[in-house]
Image (tube, rainbow, N blue to C red; front, side, top):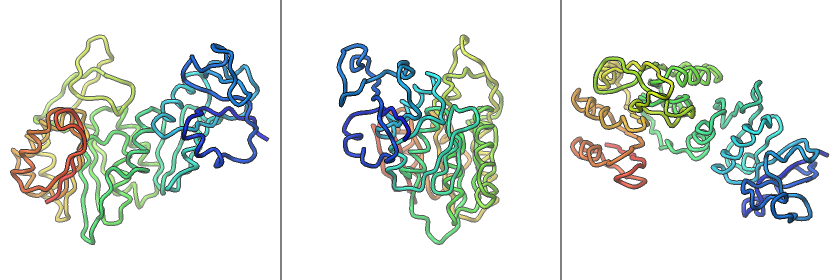
Length: 331
């Protein structure tokens, strides 16, 4: 029997605890709120202590099972990692209770996982990696019904290539062009692409530069180690500085459009740069040849919507129109 700490005692655990492995002996429970810890209030939960992560070593245990929904579980994993608990001891109940084929194993540094979801493999380490895996590969945020026609995908804001890999796995997608501004994020993307079989990875052309409204280079402060939260507009001299290469989105995308006869899908997730990217694409006449747009916007979406209306797209918006959200558009 493995001795287990159960992290999470709310509704999710109550509704799904029967799915835990049968060879577990529960020795303690855990919670993120110090007020709920036995050490603070003297109370037990189901006759066992309620621990904070820093108190785990007060009991003998083999594994920790995170028993929450995805979002909370991802945050808990980060907290456990910060407490020095390796990924070889951390497991997720929500990855047992799943609608997809999800396998995972610890990385060599014990700070993350190699996850394989429905045949796509990526390395999860940062919180944004965990969240994007769920968003793209489990919840299918970029999913749509591909017709019998062939498609080419332009992925602006590739991040660590999770969406690019998702698109490349689709049989009717013949090529994926991915663009990532930050060099360390790009290197993680390339490493993720290499983890996958040739019928997926060979479709992806990854480029290490930002698409913008002009060509040139700029110094950018790193706003967060979490790769999914960075943007090319952050200026803070107290933060680590990196040089970013920028290229005119209209010129780059026009070149792709001129080389392909397939239907074109444009995916954009650039933490605010979508406005100047759209301006450059319109200036170059790209929207005449782009068939599907799936994007995340940050700010007032009015300018983006006016361009979509101008070129005859039908669209729907998820989120607050003047704050942030998703736009899916098709001609």
